[in-house]
Structure formats: C-alpha cells, structure tokens
Length: 52
Image (cartoon, rainbow, N blue to C red; front, side, top):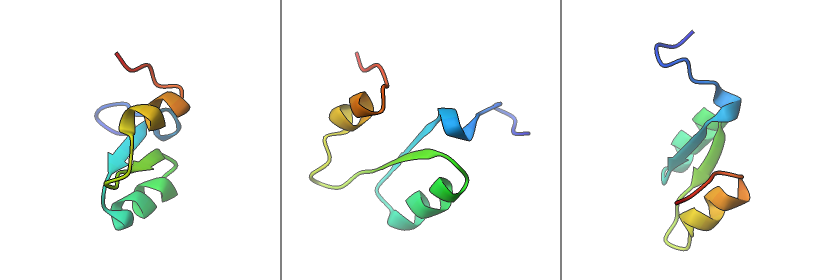
C-alpha cells in the first residue's frame, strides 16, 4: 500500500527519461514518454484523460 492510495493501472506517468518510463511501466503504470515531438494533450486524450 502506498501513502497516496494510487492504483498503477489507473495512473499516467509522464517523463522524458526512457529508463524512468521502463521502470514505471514494469510496475503497471500507463506511461507517456515526452520527446520534442510529443503532443502531450493528444497523448492524454488518446488515453481517455479529460484535458481542459
């Protein structure tokens, strides 16, 4: 149990470091690796995250 009661499969981890993405993905998190070409809003919308 974690102190924030975060469920990995219901969370999106966003980072630019491939090693961090690999590690967190192995824990069951949904991940978005940010690169200069990444449109983060589009990526989040694709995942069903409401963006306002």
